[in-house]
Amino acid sequence: MAFDPGEVGKASRFHALMRLVRIEHTLFSLPYAYVGAFLSGFKVTLWEIIWMSLALLGLRTATMAYNNIADLDIDSQNPRTWNRPLIKGAVRISDAWWLVVVGSSLYFVSAVLLNFWTAVLSPIPWIIAMSYSGAKRKHSFPHLHLGLTLALAVTAGTIAAGGDEANLLVLLERVPWAFFFGVLFWVAGFDTIYAIMDYEFDVKHGVGSIPARFGIEKALKIAFIFHLIAIAFFGLAIPLYNLGWIYALGWLIGSALIIYENVIVWRDLENVPKAFNLNIPIGLILTLAAIADVLVKLYGGG
Image 1 (cartoon, rainbow, N blue to C red):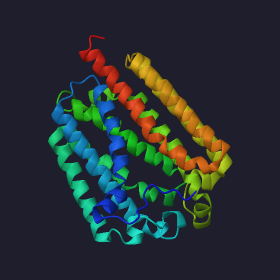
Image 2: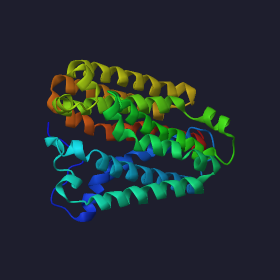
Image 3: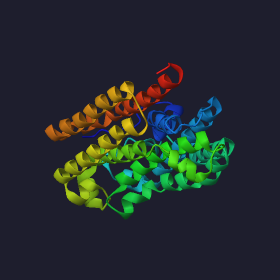
């Protein structure tokens, strides 16, 4: 299981920088914010979509670059991650730090331009996201930390859409919390599965993870429990937010794929990379189905 989504081969400097920040993962996280915006009940403008997209792009870029810098000591010892850009020298440390600065600047500027509440609250997601790399050094549950980081995009979407219309209490009431917790436990589940690839390395070097703490068999059970909780929260969104058949169909397909992700890993641990890659379509199906459902009701007479 030598799979590593962050590896880089012979490529241009620009391509190496894109591999460093996993640009495809950044793009696949954007719909979480859109769900937070569209399910909140606030009117969503094109400018709000643009600024929240740029804010997430900046934050993810800064976070991924910083995590690669912070984890350089660990990644340089792990054979699975020897082909990452910083280790191979395809990207210089100074370039990575520039990505942290530029990404953070884009994030904070976009937050300020959105509205008062996104500006005031912007340091919270930044701190949580940037501290992820330290989580595995402190405890055995960094997967929940990662889940929280991505789930905060849902909250951010609501605040971005309604920050000019409501006070903070109302904004928090309008967050689609079922999606927030669905994302949190879904991400924690698949990151637990992903960590199985580094089980032996993590145990030997004292890196915190659920597989390293409890063993692979128990880790698979914990990941499945996380995913069952996620499926329940995603399903709860149907009655809570008055979603119709479009989202219900997306939920059924997404849930089936989440179950399938676990099943193929139970059958053979060599399927961990395949299971991990399933999460991009799962996320897109769930989020885009929810957004489409809302838009059809708004503009399709449903």
